[in-house]
Length: 210
Length: 202
Image 1 (cartoon, rainbow over the protein chains, first blue to last red):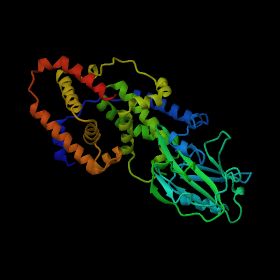
Image 2 (image 1 turned 120 degrees about the vertical axis):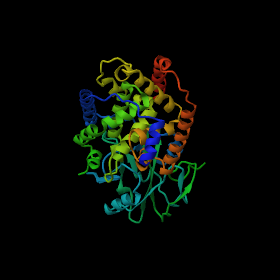
Image 3 (image 1 turned 180 degrees about the horizontal axis):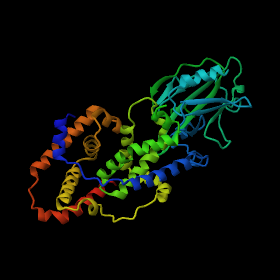
Image 4 (image 1 turned 60 degrees about the horizontal axis):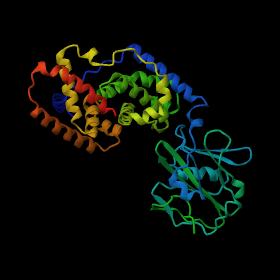
């Protein structure tokens, strides 16, 4: 907007008078804000209190997918930490770098294929492998239950030589809850590339049969 | 490290700098939207609490955080009730100021002030919310088109078209405005202005 246009608009709608935020009040409000955010920064803050609600849209895929609240904050899109028992602890901040996560897992010695499936999409074809091991036989992914921040635990020991860990991630926002969900299975055979296609089904993994 | 990167990393002193720099801007936007000091302070506090909650979304590279911050203020002002539910505990802890609730006592000491405020509120209230938001950001908060587009998460073309629609409506209003006698405007208009202003927040 140039100066003339701005003047013209100002003529039509003058600036309302705003009673100033006095320096005293500014200071009071600032002290209040600083106390609030410092309290939040403590471990008893919002993260621990935030309930892990599984959104209804994921119910159809519940057999295949597990979900944790998406963590907003931190600097990396995701983080992979090797734990003492040999499992990987994965936290997801943004599901926008699946191939980066895939590389990190491969560098850590896990032959993984990682894809991100946005809401309203599915991988095609599904199932992407004719040789998925049942969860009871190869329990690849679980949710961390140690009371720290929400995370997935991936167990590389269930993936034998020649096999592939297939991970599909999805992020859903329902109201104020943002959830990251994952489908994780071990494939004994070749794994098809994920081509994203439109879908109104649950986004992750093969559709439940029967 | 930039202010953006420091806030993203959760540095409280960076947050303090942000509050010092922009609390006035956010409060100004909120007050112009609501014409109520207490509401405006609530919106300001909730906006900064949202900034802290959403800090992980800040791109460490970029210019001023003001458009992003005002965008959050717009959202909070748009959904005051939802934000107030999220932050009800915090708002309960917020220090309150003792003062007369009618802001007009402070700023409308003269009749022409009251008339001017009432006229602005009437014109503003005649616009649709998307038009109000664009006008408030461009005209009163001084954002340019690109910054307004960033704040509202819409294309620049949408900002321009909303502004042009708003202008058309305001011109129509101005053309139809009857030159009312000042003595008749004073009392009733001020009441109306305050009432409709509060409704704009809800």
